[in-house]
Length: 373
Image (tube, rainbow, N blue to C red):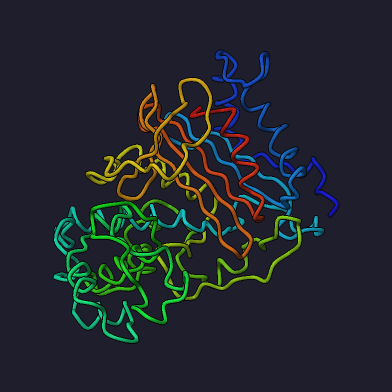
């Protein structure tokens, strides 16, 4: 694939961007001596996208707790330069859906609607819980007992014992969703856990997830290009996903919300969510819940380096000499990779959305150089 020309790097939010450049001029923010962080990113983002055949990307940086710089690169569809990435181009955020849902669930806890440490089985109808698990044959007594123990806290911190997705491996001889361990005793990343809590929250609120998010987050925080389902307005703005070699993939259509992976958004919208997390996070959302030995820390330089991975109620955490860095990545098989992080201590962060399964090659290299800004 012929890479999009470098001139398709678009720079948005001119007022805030110029102000940030002026501030950066008095600091050594650059990974390379003599360059500003802004200039370095303006060079590296298109270079990395071209190197890894990533057709399009949005990158938004936060400083002082708000969006500061935005970079737009490339095209919505490979080999179609007329379909340039714009600030309102919508990407699939994949698993970066989970922190957004966690925020909604924890706000419900703060309002007394959802009990964080009460078993979910006591907060939703038994029939709805049975329908979610969808057993072809009765689960064992142990499995039934473990299911009855699962709390929202365990679901949000991936300690329920549920698999990531129900189609992982053959389950002909057992339940569709077997728990690998007693809830609360270990860590196992689980999209199904978020889907289960979604079913509980929808019952408690009496609304589907899309409506809950629209009323409580997207509208109040001015996130007009975000949704857990594909609406007609979002459909007309979205980018197409691509394989690692740059081939376009069949377009997905998420018309049913799933808390684990169906969020459509832009980098600027998601940056507003991160700004909200830095300014007014729900109680306990960023508190470490479990140390995760099975996952390596994100590679970052200097004071942003960490040797440990923890999980909070929605985000992964790297403890560093400069404080906790909260982060989450995302990958959908429809051809999207995403990443976000923020430091509540330093009031800095970033969001990168890409329309390629090779997008992780881009964000990993950028973060390895710039750390936590």
